[in-house]
Structures are given as structure tokens and as C-alpha cells.
Amino acid sequence: MAPGLPTAMDRPHFIGIGGAGMSGIAKILAQRGARVAGSDSRESATAESLRALGATVHIGHAAGHLASDATCVVVSSAIRSDNPELVRAAELGIPVVHRSDALASLMGGARAIAVAGTHGKTTTTSMLAVALTELGLDPSYAIGGDLEGPGTNARHGAGDIFVAEADESDRSFQKYDPEVAIVLNVELDHHANYASMDEIYDSFETFVGKVVPGGTLVISADQPGAVELTSRLRDLSTLKIVTYGDSPSADVRVHKVTPRGLTSEVTVVLDGRYLTFTVSVPGSHYAHNAVAALAAGVALGIPAHNLASALGKYTGVKRRLQLKGEANGVQVIDSYAHHPTEMTADLAAMRGAASDARLLVVFQPHLFSRTQELGTEMGQALALADASVVLDIYPAREDPIPGVTSTLVIDAARAAGADVMPVSDKATVPDVIAGMAKPGDLVLTMGAGDVTDLGPQILDRLSN
Image (cartoon, rainbow, N blue to C red; front, side):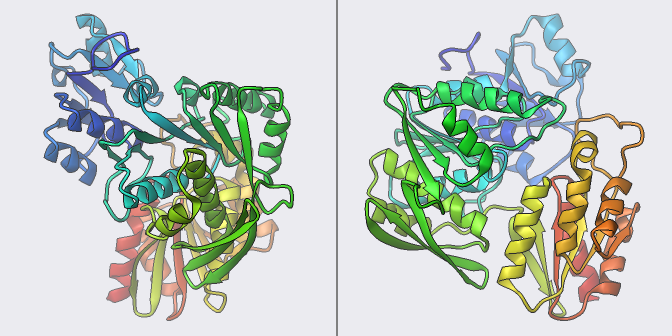
């Protein structure tokens, strides 16, 4: 069922099956007829959607959750070696497969598009999935976030195209052999795995080197890291390089991005012709994501005007400037931004979309290692807001680092002139925001952790 893996994937067990990347692979396997099982730390809508596909999902981690006839155990880099199910797998001699190997096996034989970059992967992958589906090409896709329309992050399609978000954080994107690779940007992040920009460039160069002979790299002509990476790749004779962006030298040139409230109108120049289409989310960075998606589809031979029209059907991804609701004249929007570049882009987008509104931010730093390296820049980004609440660091997979707290962000924000309030008790945030917000304000919950849970709570508090 899964060529290239050390064992068959017909009875896989996923540790952390509810995660964005893991659940997508599990869903596709279930749709292909595998008997999927797994465990996760808590109940979720994702767990329910997996059960609806026939998967067995246990809550909590215990050795007894792993069936003795499982053909493999699928893990991500976040799973620790002392996880009881992983320990049990070793006792039973059940092979352990990294999720990147599992995804690579699912992509085998397909015309694959792999979307990479420090920022924007989920949005760009989603745009392609929606557009290709709209065109009747029935693609398979695996995305790190749920699409607003279909409401899912993965699907097994009958077509020959497979669109996948390619994660650089643990170098797992080096496992794929795409026909088209997209590199949106290259910046230093994931400090626990990369010590320098040279290591980042080497990793991306390896990823690009896996593009099949005759394949295409779609890459930004504007972002400095992407430009530097391109300069290192020009000697790859079997690779076609297509650049996109504002640069006059770009192969697909962004002529104009016109804000239209919470949407944008984008005009590009492609093969000497002007092409205009709509992007349903605000901000120049999302418009550029759409142009990257357009260029990738064209590289597969899809007519540009068809793709442009289909991209207009994209309605967003959960947590990517997702409107959660409105109460007493205050709109609450959720942002996944957790790197300073992403934070700045989303805050600038909201400024452009609603220039007369006050912008209030609830920010939760993500990872101790990231905050240690980029806390100053996070604080500086918050200066774009009218006022901010900063929560404690969301640890995710990391242990605390002595001396690394949200104070790093708060001090930098205040030094940049920002109005910022530290709040350690997340449960008090709805009351804090209710005391600050006035009709016409925008409230942005921002971060990659559980800050997203606060949106509905803030709306409830504002309603009362």
C-alpha cells in the first residue's frame, strides 16, 4: 500500500493523531481503505472527523492503545522517546515511521506540488487545493490547517495531482520528490534545529534538489532569503526556475494589489499579458501567496486564466486572519502568526483593511527557543497595534529555558512605544479585552498556541 516505507501502511497507529500534519495523513490513509488508529492528548473536532472516517482515536497516551497487529507506528518530531505507545512499539517490534516518510509514500506516483517557506505554506497550499478542486481536477492534498470551505486539512482525490505543505522545521521536506516546488521565503526560524542561516540554506537547497528532472521551482523574486537561495541554484540544469513578485525581473510580476476591505484585487503580468483576480483575504503577503499558487499551477500546464478565476473561490484557512465573529460592534479575528515577519504582515494587513479601526492584539509567544532568539522583534511588531495583551509563552514541545519569558517581548514592545499589558492568567483575558474594546474596534488573537481558544470567549464576554 505504501511503497518506499519499511512496512505496509494498511494498519497504522498514529501517536498524536490530532495534530495538523498527522491528522491529514491519517485521513488520506483512511480514505484509501487503511484501518487507521491513534491517540491524542485531548478530544477535538479533528478527532471526531477522523472517527467519522472509520478511524479509532484514543484520548490520552497509554501502551494499551497500541494494537499488537499494527503494521507501523507513525510519529512526528514532537513525540518524545518515552511516550508509552512508542516504548510499547519497540517491545512489540512494530516499525516506527516518521510522518514525512508516510506523506512521501502517499505522494508516490502523483504529480506533486510541495509548498515550502518559513511563512505562508498553509495558505498557499490551501489556495492550490481549492483552485484545482474548483477546476474539476480532484487533487489530493495535505495541509497544515483546515480549509474554510471543505472544513478539512486533507483529502484523497481521484486526480493525478497531490498538493502538500512541505515542513522545513525538522528538515522533513527533504523527503519529497515533487514535480513543482514552491519556496515562498527563507528566514531563520526553528532555532532548536537550525543554528544559522547557512544551515537553513543548505536544507532548502537539499529540498529543491529533490525536484524531479525537468521539474519547476517557483520562488519569490523579492524576499532576500529566497533571492539568495536562487543565486545558489542556477547551476541546476535539470530545473526550471520561475520567479514571482514585485521585482521588474520576475517571471510572474505583481503589477498591483488593491485592497477591497477584507479582500484584495491582484493584477499580474504573465507572458506579457495582464491578468486580474480576487483574493478573499486582505494583505499584500496573501496576494503574493496567490501569485505563487498561480505560477505553480501554470507550471503543471493549467491555463492561467482558468486558475486565476478558480483562485477567487478560495475563502480562507482557519486561523489565517479568520473572522471569528462580531459582538457589540467589535470584530474578533484569529491569526496564526507567531514569527515577527508573520506578525508584522498580518498587523499591516488589518491596518490596510480597516484603517479607521483601533487594533487590539492578544499575543501568545510560541516556543521558548523562538522567543529567546526573536522576542525583541516580536515586541517591535506589536508596536503596529493600538494596544496589546501579552500572555505567557506557549511551550508546545519544548522545556522552559532559564530566563526566557514573555518579559522579553513586553520590554521590547514598550521600548518601541507600544501600549502593552502582561497577563499571565489566560482566563482573565475576555474581561480585560471587554474593558478595553469599543464599538468599531478589531481584536486580533495571535499566536500558534491555544490563544485561538480565546476568540469565542471574548465574543461571549462582549455580548454580555
